[in-house]
Length: 214
Length: 263
Image (cartoon, rainbow over all chains, first blue to last red):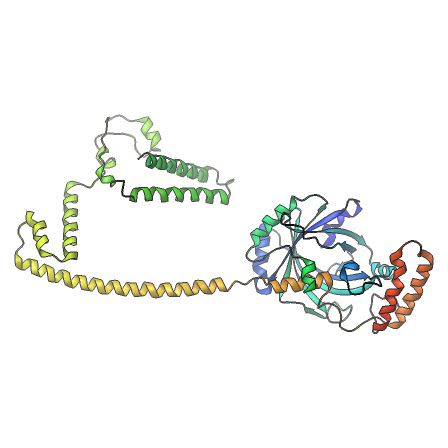
């Protein structure tokens, strides 16, 4: 699923990811998929699915063991459906909530394609695996906007992507746009799109700092 | 009167316009557009009926329409104006088209019936006499008979009405409870789930393995590697030089083997 954004990888300009998040319970997922299929591009085709394994690596500083803000997280992702596809190394910054004039979360976003030995490389660099999960779902495009409807699975044994347990009874729904810094207008489009999915899904900017403290 | 005329003309303009749009631009017209037009139409219909109902406006039947000119010839303008429905404006069509009240016989019958209904509702034979004076055929006996019949009918009607009222009420109750259920039902998303999912993917809450999984072996291994690295690259980056300390803390927690660990 990350292939679509990997085209940005050669450019030096800082990219921002605009983000809205929500969830939908399993029972209503089909309704949501149908609606998204109607709203998004390529309505005539079946929606595309993905099945990825994501590993999150952290580089801890010795002084701040338990402070997440002081850690650097790198996310490695690879598809379980297409083993030959390139792996991805992704950095996402802390999501900024901003004020009321902003409709979405904004965070820095860097995404590079890598070979499959990126994990070894990260270990060499001093990164350690913090957690991993399997993410499975569907994605849609509407112009520059990307919508993912995904189920998060907990892995019961390390590195066993077969032995899974769903994390919750809901699908995570994310509406994202990756754009160069300064393109604030896209937030309006995203807000309008999110309005169209109500009341099925409430796509909102959710303050990550607030909920991680809970 | 002027406002009525304005509303009427607006109504016709909009309705014609939307009909034309639907007929000719059905391929390009969008739903929101169509709905907008319908909203306009219904709004105008509403204000029109409000105007007609208001006290100030006398019933339409009190107006008289006078044809100013009749002609047996075909009128092209008229044909165009009525979209081909009416071609000639002559003595034959005028009474039909310009009629504002029913024919005299019909009207007479209508008023008579209205009177009778009014009487029986009030059940007042005296005024009945007054109203039916013109006919003057009814005897006292017939009047009494009429009254009892009316009373019977009234009773039946009352019974039926109350029955219907009951049915409607119960139907409404059902309806409302159903609607309540429906509005209560669609809980399609849950804030708690949203939060737990976001926490999981951002900080790994609920995803981190409960058992520590790094083996001591690999740690020592790593330690070596890292110290080598350190000696090579130490001046380059402070973050890298910090790595070994991370590993020291990991040793305490170490056990089991992880696939992405170097072995």
